[in-house]
Image 1: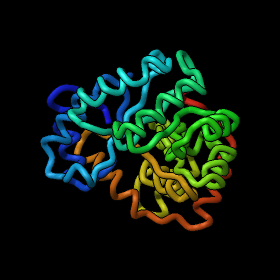
Image 2: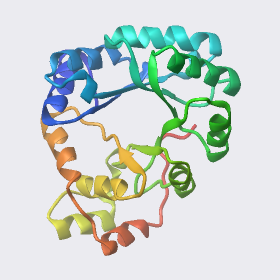
Image 3: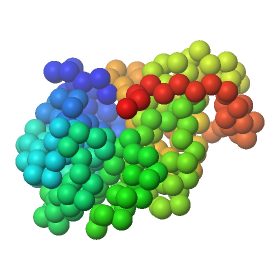
Length: 247
């Protein structure tokens, strides 16, 4: 979500009232307090909502993980996080020490589940070997212009969820002929088709950004769109790659 001030709080409340049950934020987004305020104001029961945030790279040194997590909890107005990600394996990230600090957070009841974000397959293997807690999710860029089959296969093989961010490729899916053709066939939008294509992949869920009620409703509606094998193959055959968020 694009969240700012009272409009952001309203957007979070609206999303939850419409039926969304996963809130994804990060320390670097500087909107944890807004997400927390929206959650507090909505009618959704806390136990029904998954709240995830991410530790930014400058707070991944082992000694910094706990205080930064406590600051996130305070901003969110929560006593525990459902899911805490390593945002990127850079900066202060020390695999053994950082991940041991994450395990301590789980052991102490501050975090329920550990996730990672923007990892490569070898980094995922290393993290799984070091963590006591299982990896619950890996968040990575994934859309019709940037697919990481090796990462999706890794998620399926190891039983965790691949969480696709930027499923609309920053709006670029509107300009992709195959996506537009499938949208016309189903009398829907290229955005809905892209979300359906992403979530149609085994083991993949997505977190499209939205702030207006119209876009929130549209993203929910996309979840009910079913693409056939021909649709999937047409989008799979797009011979172009564009990574929006390189290291």
